[in-house]
Image (cartoon, rainbow, N blue to C red; front, side, top):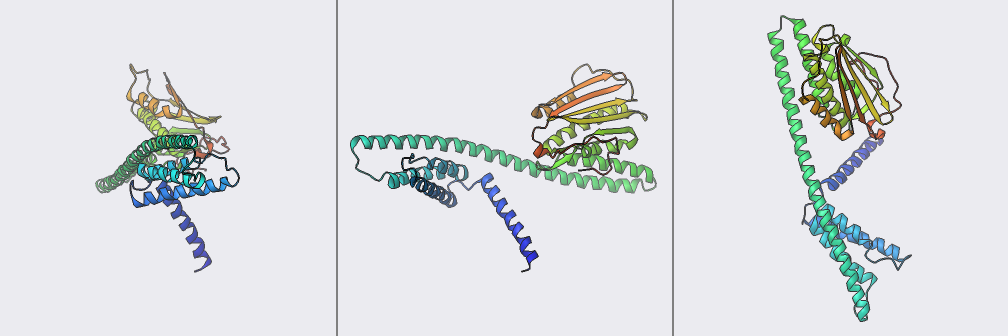
Length: 353
């Protein structure tokens, strides 16, 4: 085997090992299975080894101290039966290795019984709490797994439907190249915007990519964008995708994008851990405040709540003005570096990382 193939195989092996460990921590072992019982025994053996190591330096250390983590880990990974096996084996190991006298004086024996009763009660509470936590996490994981399967299936069906629509348009508008190209470009932009909503949680998205997906269909001369190059995690990006889509839809139906001369200006910037965005429309028909709160306003507030965000909309005669803010507290996850202000540019040009 060549050096190159060995170097390629090593990362693959590390990746497989990492995936196996993540799968074990996420899904655990089948409750009551032989593997779960073996895992419980291994946890107790590790706890016993750690206890023997400390016993060389601190013989007076509480004899049950290292077995509580063993019970906790066995329950989380293997279920409540594995936790009880670790509980019993830990108690036996503590008595045999660190308190071997089976015929102590009456008072000493009473103290031992009290210690074991406290150990049994404490470890039992650990098993109860961990089993409840384990079932809750597994249920959430199953729902997340099912949701991901449904989303992937919907994405697949959407692509198929778009392919059919493209084929129909090419056939029906084969003599109208300009009209066909314009419609297909808008459909591609809408599909790109929908793709942003299904990004995995670990991916980051540049805010310009969101704006490009939502607004490029309206033409480069009607959209002005100015702000920092900010990369957002998937959940923040999905929230802003929903908000920009609603704002763009309203602008196309009732606002600046309804008229040929209408303009939309978007600016944004970072202030400490807060991203602030300003959406300003001009050149559209006169607007007025709605009588009640519509679906879009409720959607904005619900979407921004997890990020302590706010939104303020002003219905000025010249056009709508919307100010949005949301917290971005972990910059290591958002990918925000030394953000530099840039001048307005084409949204559908190349994005700078």
